Image (cartoon, rainbow, N blue to C red):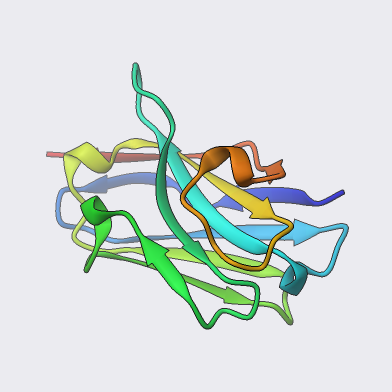
Length: 124
């Protein structure tokens, strides 16, 4: 079992920045690929970014390319999502997820463990 707890969400103005954190416990995080997903009100959950177990390979959704950066610190069992140039349409609950495979994937069903989410609200 892996327990995931997100933090760092909040209210920010259009163009601002936030850094989300995901703290993992229960297993060694380096054995898992990690991903961030988000769900806006009335919409389906969607992929944001993912990172390989070693941290050497990442993938991003087109909607966040050049603005968001996923990273990890396996020594601390932490995963991060640095979000810059935030837009109103980035408003959503952001979820951290762990995949027992080491290669990152955009497919939500591939992930085995999920956090409870953290709210990000971008105001105009």
